[in-house]
Length: 138
Image 1 (cartoon, helix red, strand yellow):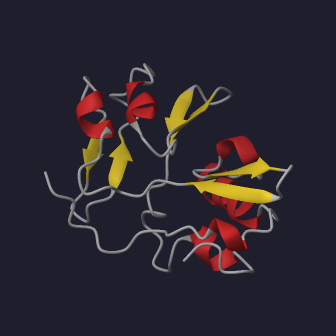
Image 2 (cartoon, rainbow, N blue to C red):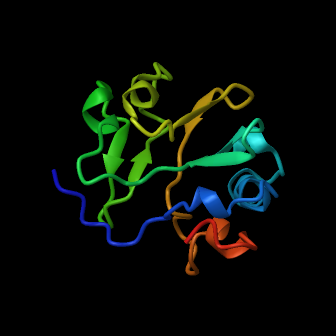
């Protein structure tokens, strides 16, 4: 199934300065608390070279996570955003294993998987994009 989404968050890790404004804002918006482990994206650090990678769902044209989920918990909405249905999710982790971008995260405290859902219901651009002071997310 082709993904009709046109807008997606694009990461520019070469601009990232590891301020974590994106991750803290994300967790506050979605979970009501500033907690890096509850964000829908991750900043990975290579401190030896002072470089970063930004792991966030790319809402792929052919998402590998969809067929990996044998329980139907992964679905595309009408905008082409890949979502997790917590009621159907068995927490098996097949979706996270299938994601080639390491963009689906297990939150042990919440006992569930999290991923970017483009700030569903928010009229503005995704909050992480709005909060990034250096344009590492567009």
